[in-house]
Image (tube, rainbow over all chains, first blue to last red):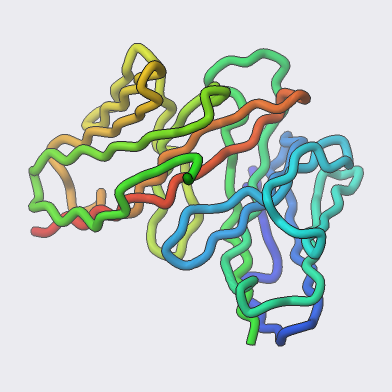
Length: 118
Length: 113
């Protein structure tokens, strides 16, 4: 049973460029969330996709956009890259549940894409 | 003020020691709570959920105090393999019930021989 897979694992870009990161969720999962983790910090929520729509968004500018495809996979796009965008970008998948039990929304993370902006 | 606050540490303890991590959260709408573990340059992995009644998983005990908006993790008989960063996490459920996880900065634990 494949877990969450992300690509590429590492990439280097220069300021002003654009980047696309890709994520395939764990088999059976239907929701994808994206997180940014700067060095020494906890993951910061970017946004979440379910049924091909952005459902929730964190405090990130419009330069950060995404997409979810019918097969539940997802892309994260970042335009006009800044030095401060250098981070580990984590994709996490989960299964929407209709009941608010405490086991709901447990995320499975991918290994991440490490972006360096020069 | 951060939504989830943790002491970043590092906590340096000898093998066999008992160590406790604390965490506070600011959003009273938080509805479920977790501890995740993250090894160096790896992805976070779920360690355990946290319930109001307190719960235990082997050497690990988690407690939640909703009135004080406070979460704790106790590790007994520390092993070298417990060295990692421990992330306090709250789940704020959205209108679609999909929720989003809010992470603390993480507390680094280093267990020494």
